[in-house]
Every structure is written in structure tokens, then in C-alpha cells.
Length: 106
Image 1 (cartoon, helix red, strand yellow):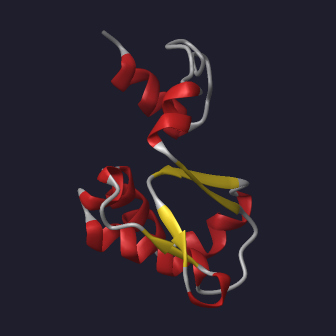
Image 2 (cartoon, one colour):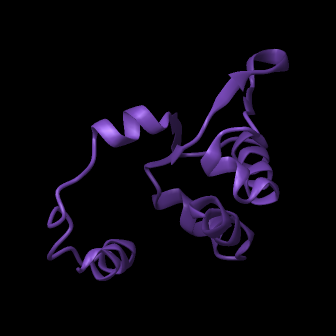
């Protein structure tokens, strides 16, 4: 799952420094409002359920302290409604965009 990958990125020693250049992180999943106004993940949401431990780790790290990026959680309906065209990232030099381009090739 994408949250498995995100948990691995956040565990990497470089994340502390490199996260300063991240503008936002968006995940497809589910959340409810928990104690003190903090987001609480919905363990039944499919994208979170696939790797619940990684999902919990990402949510905990995002909420642990100050950060320079926004964190968005969108439903599967919202994610489906705003899909990118297959060629939207073609030509990008960003390594993640290049990985996505390779994965999207038919």
C-alpha cells in the first residue's frame, strides 16, 4: 500500500531534513475526529486496512509535532473524481513522478 511506502520514507534518517521540502501529503483513506480534535484513522477504510500498522505509524508521525507540510485525507470517492490524465506527469524530473510514469505505462 502507499502508506507502507510512506511509513518507510518517514522511518528513513533523511526524512527529518528532507521533509522540509514537502508541501503536502495526500492519502486516500478514512478518518474520524478523535480526542482533542486530532484525526483518528478509520481502520475499516480499505487503503488503511491493507497495512494497518503502517497507517497507524504515518498518522502518529504526522500528528507528533510541528511540520512544514499539509496532510490531507480524501475518500475513495473524492480520489476517483480527481484522477490525473495518464500523461499528466510525463516529462517531470521528480523521481516519484518518474516512478509513477513507469508504473502507468500500459
